[in-house]
Length: 117
Ligand code: AMP
Image 1 (cartoon, protein in one colour):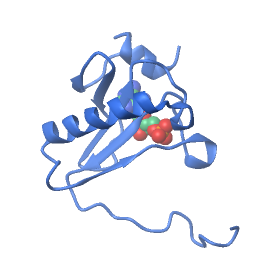
Image 2: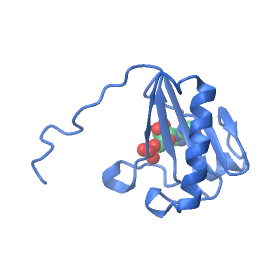
Image 3: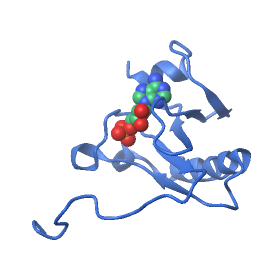
Image 4: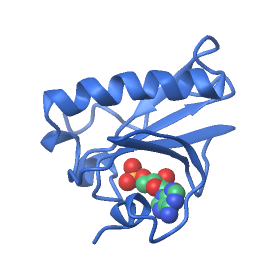
């Protein structure tokens, strides 16, 4: 069983922000922004590439509820999902990173972004 399924089953603890029948939001263990929360579906899906439209519709509404609860719905935030190896995915249970609480930097991820394109 994957680590996020263990969080769903309460087999390992998490610092929960919000939960409903289908999704859970909890604080990232290693925050990379003043606010860094993960949103996961309770049903195991490996990654974004495998997510269905119905799940995505539900998770969109849930993320909007979470950002309102966190008080960043007006100030702004970033939503990221890392998909697969090149995307830098470490945990293979679909999750969305919600980051906010500061003006977040954004730039090239590699030194010569177009070199291999
Ligand atoms: P990703 O690279 O998109 O797969 O990111 C996985 C994220 O999960 C990382 O930001 C980790 O810090 C976070 N993480 C891993 N284990 C836990 C955990 N038990 N509780 C909260 N966050 C976790």
